[in-house]
Structure formats: C-alpha cells, structure tokens
Image 1 (tube, helix red, strand yellow):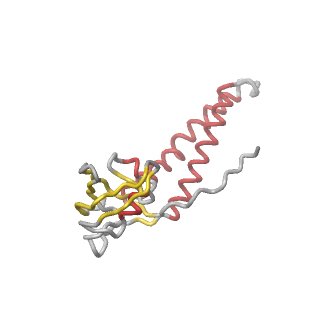
Image 2: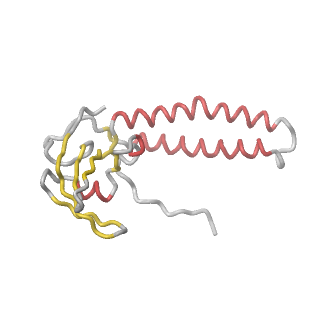
Length: 168
C-alpha cells in the first residue's frame, strides 16, 4: 500500500490579523531557530560515524522532514489567506469574527466566536468557520433557529445574541 492520501476538502481562507500573526511567528521560529538547531544536531550526529545505527542522526533527520513539511505548509497557507480586519456591513447577522450566543433544546447557553480553521485552537470558545454549527449559523440573526446535523442526531439551537468586538 502506498503513501498516497487523497486531498482533503479545502478549508476557508479567512483569518483574523491575530491568527495570521501567529502563523507568521511560527514560520519564523521554525525557519530561523528550530531548523538551524536540528541541522546542527544532525551534523554532529553524522560526524560520529555509522549513520545506520545512530539514533540521534535518524531522529534528527525525521525532525528535519517534519519541520520542512510544516514550513512548506505555512508558506503556502499564508499566501492564500484573506485577513478579515473589518466588521461586516450588517452586524446584526452572523459572519466571520462574530461572537454568537446560542441556546439549545435543554436551555443550555453557549457563546463562541467564529474564526478561521487555522486559529480555532487559540481559545476554548473559538470554533472554525468550517464547523457544522458555524456553517448553519452563517447569515442568521437574533431569534433565528438553526438545525445542526451531528453524529448523535439533529440539534436545534436558537440564536440569542450576535456581537462583534474589535478585531485584533
């Protein structure tokens, strides 16, 4: 069996200025700090002799491949991202960057912010714009009900509040 993996569905290309800055900082760290450190360690391990049984050399080469893969990904990703640094014209509706409060059938309230797929791990209340609930909420406004299909069945949410804060 080969290593081929079919390409995944492309995600949204939206990102906040903070998210883009974080990706740029990661790219700079990997390229200017981490990769030179690992390269130095690999060359020191290679100087010790037999490379076929040298665990430090083998592990270092593996680390370099992982770093290079991530650098390629970040470089390509940063080229196609669209930075959203303004509020939408209609702030009563849910769009990228909105803080949305919803209530489910059990009257449990939940508030989250809709962000890009590259930044939803920055905060526990962030969800990706590609998530099923975010897709269902887009263009909705206060009072609207949305049905979200989950693996456990359909869930109904009511939009209680939509707000936008300064985009950083």
